[in-house]
Amino acid sequence: MLILVVNAGSSSLKYQLLDMKDESVLAKGNCDRIGIDGHISHKTSDGRAYDADCNFPTHTEAFMELVKVLTTGDAAVIKSMDEISAVGHRIVQGAEVFSETTLVTDEIIDKIDELRELAPVHNHAHALALRACKAVLPASVPQAAVFDTAFHQTMPEKAYMFGFPYEDYEQYHVRKYGFHGTSHRFVSAALAKAMGKDAKELKVVSCHLGNGSSITAIDGGKSVDTTMGFTPLDGVLMGTRTGAVDPSAVTFLMEKHGFTPSEMSDYMNKKSGFLGVSGVGSDNRDVTAAAQDGNKRAQLSKDMLVYEIKKYIGAFAAAMNGLDAVLFTGGIGENAPDVREAVCSDMDVLGIKIDAVANAGVKGKLAKVSQSDSKVEVWVVPTNEELLIARDTLALIS
Picture (cartoon, rainbow, N blue to C red):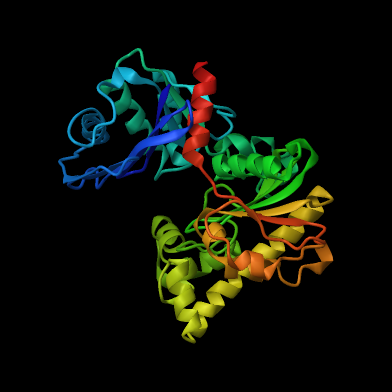
């Protein structure tokens, strides 16, 4: 059974085709620069590749090209889209409307699009991709929407509410939603399996660290709190995002710079974080190299990230009244041993003891990196959001 997984952005459409018999990836690629000029890059599991500039005025043309490269030419992996059993879509914002994977209909697409005010960069693009799929694919191929926010719908009210007047929640739906839910759900389940335990028995802090980062408290397999909030801007320092700041600092800088609300949002989302503090760039690898060369601002940005992660681990351990494991995932979490070691050092109060030697040798693979006598286990768990979307899609249509 073949499942196509689609992750649409405002100007991109990433995809993977998976064979669910063994959960292998047959092909993957990206249609980018949609609405600008257009380009597709496509690779198969046996090493064949296709790269070309294209004309992508909208997501529909991009999806038509995706179908073309999957079914024709030297890098084709299927003969017809009729061979695909279903399509699974990653949807960033489901708000309180969607708490589980949902079969796509015209009404569902409209509801997803209606939520675009809560995720302006993502949800409208998702709706465009969903409509493009419906226009291009045979009507017999079902589609499923898998929501990033769904995993966090188990948060208690005391964790997701803000201190604004309650009417703002009732009228404008202003609350913490949390993101990276698909990743946190995947890695926490994989961790329980690796530890040989039932997820319901575990209290875990999941650290998804990358250009965008979020920390989630998972108690008994359910999200009870997370760092990203109303939008993915909240929480720890990120590649270009501020993370949590005093709201008064926002209004103060708006006046100083003469920013409109949208300009201030752009400032906090695209010009801050590692990029703004270090002055070097947004990529952890570049910032680390600069720090090693003696750049104090680069080192400061790394120190800020580590410090903030430490604080959230302690806070979430208190919120859950215990802690069994800390896991690291995402581009930084999986591939930056120095960040993991710095976060887990001097955490004896929580019973965390990282094995520096074991940790140093782990990049991008499942491994335990804590000492044998550590009361709290520390793990690296590679994430695979596309696989979880495919599994959810398969379960829904089955």
